[in-house]
Image 1: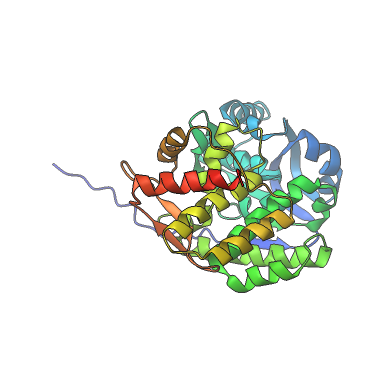
Image 2: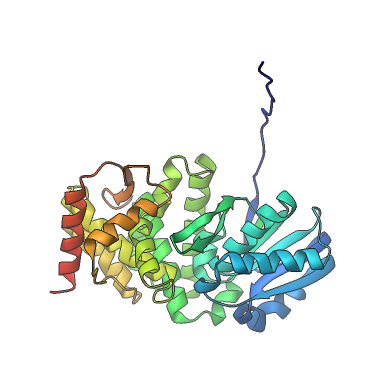
Length: 352
């Protein structure tokens, strides 16, 4: 006997991204604002003055990547249950990428899914993490290995929040901009080389360009079954760097910067990227004081950690490699010896 359950349907997950000063938000339900200690102190009044809702609850988390774990998710869920939130309630993710990822994951699993809104407060979250519906937490095995795709209902990007952003956090966001330019838009990369992103108008234009790229890619591949994986350029290597530092030594964008240089060493070895292009990318990263050198103590162990990457299969590693500035390839089945040699070549950069 066979019984079929027909679930064929089309779901419209479209939403708007507003890049402008935050306007009045009217929400006809209970709202939980999930934020961290730093953002709450600096900006909660700014948001509350612009928010109207049936009831507002502020849930405050500790600040830092090391708190992006299941304990924080359970704390969020406990708060929602204790304050009688339900399926019609909404969550506002108010913070950087860590807050956004955890808020979205909590929204995805609370009573099997409620709506959430992204209001990113860091440059990195404005240009990347808040757009696309990737949510999740870290585990001892790696970064973002537990999570769900859960699209926000809207994203509000307000440059006001960047005024209090520490320079190191700002630079970490620039790494994600450079990542998008290298992989998808050579003209954007050329422009980044010509401007100073500490200029307010330039950074606003760069945010808009980055979001357009990200939105275009997500629209083509929401669940990362193909081209969206290219947005992980620098991440396969960078995630291992983050884990080796216990998610504390480097900011995410800093680890991505290191990962980009590692990936480029492999691209050069495979003849996909020229030495001149490799140098241009490194120069632009270093202009914003982003780290490019990192000593791999155990290259064999570093290589084995790639198999924990979400893009990798049972017996193969997927690498995202730049093939000229402005284009990217998703490459599988590269010989282990080739990758090991590229990592050795990378280590040698620090010895020069």
